[in-house]
Amino acid sequence: MGFDGAVGRSAPGGVREHIASSWRRARLAGIDPDGVDRPEIAEVDRVGRLAVAAEPVLRALAAELAGEPFSVQLADRDCRILDIWCDDRTLDSAFDDIGLVVGAAADEQVLGTNGIGTAAETGRGIAVHGEEHFLAGLKGVSCFGHPIRHPLRGRTEGVLDITVAGGRAHPLFAPLLSRAARDIEERIVETARDGDRRLFLAFQEATRRRSSPIAVLGSDVVLTNRSAVTVLGEGGMDLLATLRTEVVENGPLTRVLEAPDGAGIRVRAETVADTADGVLFHLVPVRAAPREPVRRTARPVPPGRSVLVAGEPGTGRSTEAARLLGTADPVVLAATDALTGPSRDWAARLSALVGEGVPAVVVDDVDVLPEELCTVLRPLLDAGPTRLVLTCGPVDELSVPAARLVARCASRVELAPLRERRDELPGLVADIAARVRPGRELILTRSAVAALSAYAWPGNLTELTRVVTELAHLPGTRRIDVEDLPEHLRSGPRVTRLGGRERAERVAIQHALTVAGGNKREAARALGISRTTLYRRMRALDVAET
Image (tube, rainbow, N blue to C red):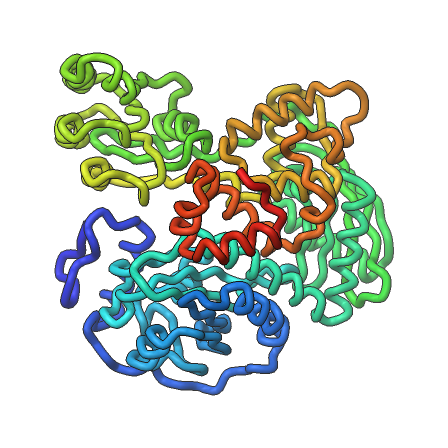
């Protein structure tokens, strides 16, 4: 897809929607993609809380990537560069050409689409590869950007970015960067003012002792566990904010409140010791009417519009396709059927479904279709009232014919693999357990969570569901420790002691080895590192030979 009337050039064909949106913002900002105007330099706080918290993390990250063509940049909440770690002449030259130095602005209004500015604009981790950059001067590099948020205040404190020479960065950088950002956030908490730290510690202690709904509120700090968010519902935090003032002024209280959804909540509130305005809330639902399971708001595919759902096998592509179509039982046409029978029959069946005006059709695994069937399917995406959802593997791995096909879809949903959702594992386990065995709550110990997080999950959610189903039907206690896990998930003590960043790197290496069928040369090439570096990191991270 491109931009009508864009200054100088259009966005690359088949570009991801968030990249296309960034190009639109750059065009509206009047940025010349071939421009050489150097960003304005301003004073920045290089000894502030963010810089101090990030320094040891950046140093460790630079040491881990030593010898690779990379650069790490830290920017503040205004997207001004606080620090640059660079060990590559090509990147040094590229940065010099556009004036990317300490104090320079890297927001989209100045540099267009880039790892720092676009991550800050979208509020999430993002990869920008080669031609996806708006400025011509950045098209020779790839970058990953990730926001850094204050864990207590919820606001964005800055952005961390890894940039590498070449048009496409290897997949190891995404989990490394995500974990490094989390490490910085944890260090921000460690260096927070005493009052904020006490609120955080009170929340940790309360949630460690019990799994019931817990919330801690300060004047500008809000901490809740997942069950508290569920119990409170929309608008429930406003009720607690009102109570907080009363508790600070008059002391502890116990009260039954009516939540916005009509359910009752028994609240026991007390001040947090040694804080001026912190209050700890214990919440218990009462008189709660039965609720339907929480579902995301569906946005069905309108007639005549097509959607792509992409992701690795097991990430929930079929479930997401059905959700988008607004039906639990859509007509499904498997592309694999075209490989086991006459392709002409497969094409005829698809054409008949669309010609008959079937309301909704899911075409599964379009990435396996031969080129001639991709050509048949392309015009049907815009053929009439039938709502079509295509599913496929990761977009970056598609063949040219399949990539051309999916580029015709009006919109797309890309599902993250489970190895990139490690922070969600406890919640996913709870959700799956509730579904496969209602009333059975599984409580994971820290060592069990660490073991699950250290695994690459090649089967994604499908594999996790099998594991949780087995755990949910274990006899006896609902407390799950490492010994309760299947043998292949039991990490040794060395692995469970790994830091978050090292654990993320370990998972990325495991995944690369799985995809490469154990071939070290291919895995190293996929990761963008040498075989020597791969063997060294495998030994350091206790990755088993395959």
